[in-house]
Length: 170
Picture 1: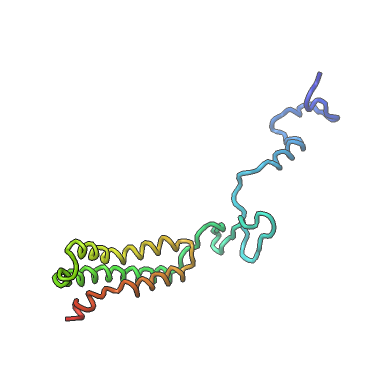
Picture 2: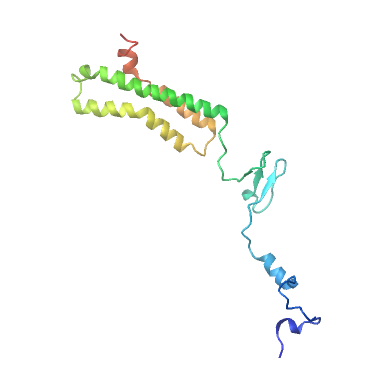
C-alpha cells in the first residue's frame, strides 16, 4: 500500500529529490508558522496602522533602525548642557566642603559634633546624589524634563555656608 505523495494524481519519477521545491501544502504550513525575523521598520513618511502597528519601528535617514522601545539619543545641545550642569554640581560639592568646614567651630555651640558631621557629609553628597537620581529617574523622559529637574537642584542645593562665610562673606 502506498502512502504520502505516491497517492497524488500526478507523480513523477524523482519527486523525492530533496533539492526540489516543497509541495504547496508544505509551503502553506511554513508560511503560517511564526518566524523569528528582523523587526519591521518603515521609512520616514510612512505610518503603520492596524494590529501590531505599535511594534513597527522607523528607519532614520542614516539607515539605522529605531524601534518604539528604544530610547532616543540625546542631542549635542543636551549633552553640553548636562556637562555644564554636572560641573556646577561639582563646584557645589566643593563649596559645601569649604563652607561647611569653616562653620564647624560655630556649629559646635548649636548642635552636637556627631549631628554636625552627619549633616556636613550629607550636604557634601547631596549635589552628586541629586544629579545621579535625576539622571536615572528621567531616562525615558523628554530631555527638557531632565534639564528642568537638574536646574531645580541647582536652585535648591546652593552652598550657602560658602557664600555667607566662605570667600564671598569675608
